Length: 115
Image 1 (cartoon, rainbow, N blue to C red):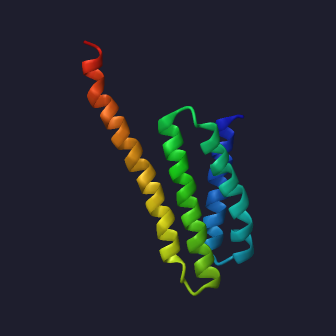
Image 2 (cartoon, rainbow, N blue to C red; image 1 turned 120 degrees about the horizontal axis):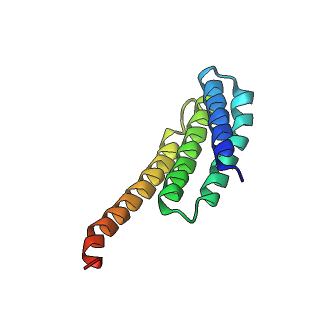
């Protein structure tokens, strides 16, 4: 997999999804959910061997899921899905905070390991 090309396509799809959301083009926003989320999951899966990349890509998956829920709520549920979207935003933040706590602990312990 050419990661750079997938990342670039992912950004293009994500921008198109959010542009559709912003312009209330419901059909296009919903269509763009599939490639945007699919590429985000593919990037997360591909980056499993690198903890930092994986944490950020997984957090991105949660972020996009939150965006999709929020967008659908604005389109069809009188903006009534924000609380549901917040769950996914919090999940992404938990993934990143867990990763950074783990990374800080590793860096903190590293100097004593070299003695």
